[in-house]
Image (tube, rainbow, N blue to C red; front, side):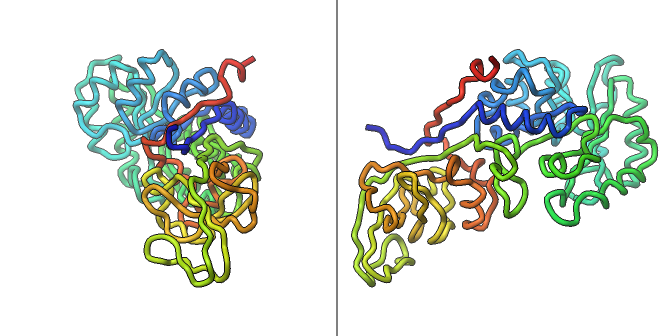
Length: 364
């Protein structure tokens, strides 16, 4: 038998969540954000599932963008960090890719191209995130440069919200965006998942949902199911050994867990080499044989341990849900002091992936 760990990706859930995003912004067109290998779900898999509903895809990686185009997708494909080198212009033109321009040097890479090259530009303004984006003082000049460049076919105004998932919200950044001169009439692409869910005024011409289409909430204290979303990835394994600890005995590296009394421990075939967070402490939620319980001790490379006290029927071979359906990844991430995004993206290549929810069946 093969090692029992497996990730299941539910394409029906992915389409359900994308449809939920579309209902929130029915007048907007939507990029499906598939960067970081579609947040660990597989960019080819996700794009195949959404090909007939997504208005475009947004990602960072040129090679993945080219594969999407070569697969036959004809919609808009946006490179969210734009060009890293002027030599990439050739591929942008050949594969009709849209590019973010977030600093003046990227604008200069588009100089001297033939008129009618048809480059689609998303011009990014820094409105307070202070990561990427043109500064307010530079924005009018670069905007004029783009408008005067005969190789540029269209310009979309872009920014990114730093606190759409927090109480401060988006108003302060919208005010900064609206102060920029010359942007009247430009189509806008503003809303990430959090803004799409909370702030209709940000929906604009294009929105770009990411984490929500994978069934995960962008908000602290809420899960995807709380928002009507369905988990797309479920990471599951099985118990491969059972141990009985007496009071005072420890388990795992560092002996960080000591049994207060007699306790039954299950060893699960999952560790940090599979993408489970090593820093997840004792008490991180898991589901064993359909019942909630928690981890104990330190996560090791290939194994972790769980408390079976509340699951007396569980023995070797009992199913374990590490995250996903029945055990929201947000709760696991919260216990581990991180976010669900990181756990999904960290799924290791050695973990086999099974698809369910056939796309064709979902379309019927």
